Length: 172
Image (cartoon, rainbow, N blue to C red; front, side, top):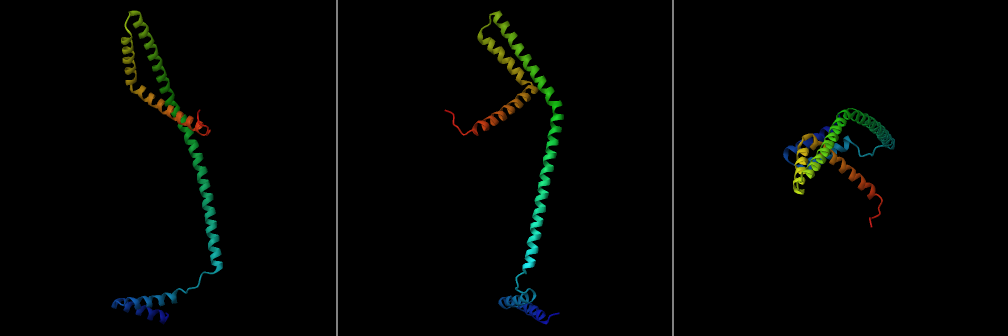
């Protein structure tokens, strides 16, 4: 073992125990100067290190690209499966909503024509239509379908606004 390191270590411990901070700091600096010389790393070491970092960055970039491709393929497959299995749920719901709408329209036409033939006034006719509309909308299936249709309408409006807004010409 190196005697200079041992003596420097002992000086540092004695200074630390007695509370002489400046002497302890000086002893610790001398220990570190003997252990780790102040030479900069060699050019060959720096070159090898930078080459290793560049190779690792290139490998990370390839791995990220592969991960993005895999995520795109998995997302496309998942979307296809969702459309395939979701169609069995959505199409019957849309068909029942369409039938309910036709039933409502036919009922409204029949009530309107029967009311006109019976000689009822305009207010009673509008009241009957209002009652029929509220009964129609109160059905939970119809309410859900109406909410879904509103969502589609909002999405279409946003898409149309983006398409028209991208032109850059203001309306005159």
